[in-house]
Length: 295
Image 1: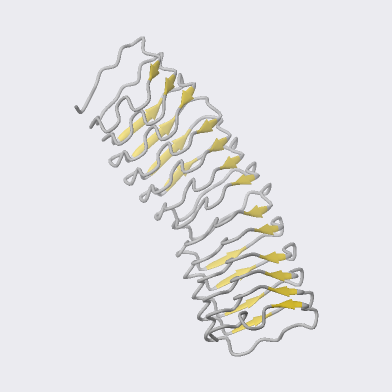
Image 2: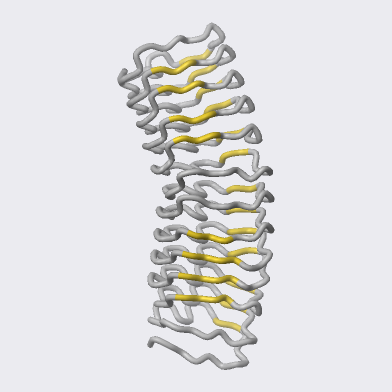
């Protein structure tokens, strides 16, 4: 079945109604108010326009629509739900025309061809994994109103640069993990917290500028950043956590700040090119037999 004519008075499409039905075209009725979870999962649409009449949208409604290339969102809901376009591997452009406030978890995860996403300034929150696996997404323009960013929001994406919303004051867990196109990166002074795995396995990252607002470099923060050759850590940092620089195999020199008090286990494990390092007198807690293992 490649097409279906829906009743003009239809207000609700139930869960899994057209799950993998093979539909390639759809015209939504003018009175449609709700589509439940997985309503059009795995269909063959190439273009979609979600009507302004929609008041409720379930999770993963259009996920795995592998032929979908372009989508436009016109509904007046506050949230683009979980996994709405997850796994739409051919999607190249998405436009959100409404005053939506949240892009929920995994909304565009593994949209591998996505190169353009247009979002309104009303967006205040990006959910976990929302754009993870978007390998062709080299840049993204975000609303300055965003103050909440979910874990792994851009994991394994194609980002080459990133501008932080002014209201966002942290880098979430795994936010840029596996972003192999990042070469240089600047963390602004508006950021006062970096969470675990933030830049792990950014294998092309050669340099990063960190602000004096950071006190902790967390677990696995730069684990596997194999292109690092040198790094200056700001004087505000007092704690380097477990495996922070593990397997930074090109790292030759690093300057530790005078205020540093603790170095976690395996922090520099596998940094095989690290020639020397000076431990500040301020350090009172260190795991001496594992911090520099395999050097």
